[in-house]
Image 1 (cartoon, rainbow, N blue to C red):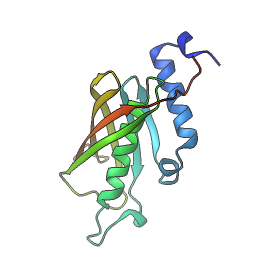
Image 2: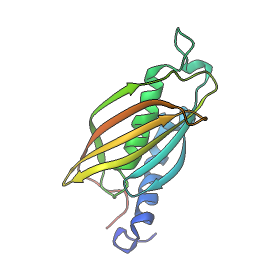
Image 3: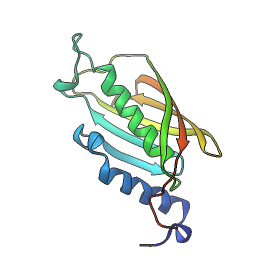
Length: 147
């Protein structure tokens, strides 16, 4: 494997995502799929299963939040620096339904030093907005690819 300093930003983002994915049992077991990775960006998708519905027969907000949080995590970890969530909030704008395939698209709004701000838009298979999420990140010690 190439050293981090020998990789393009895209290669580094993909290598960081692969290392994270290998250990991300929560995202894997919920059936999430990585659709896109680039520096400061990630798109993940997930189908709403019967086990993910609430008492209103809608997609439970906690699962929608989890999808958004996973996309946020992959986006803010694309620079080969282990980065964690520091704070997050979500606004639900429409219900998700059983069988919907949700897509969470995370994009970096700003990054300075060890801190970052990421916006995640969650839509259903028809492109209809379901929720908007904002996460604040903080880089900690560690990397995915040896320097």
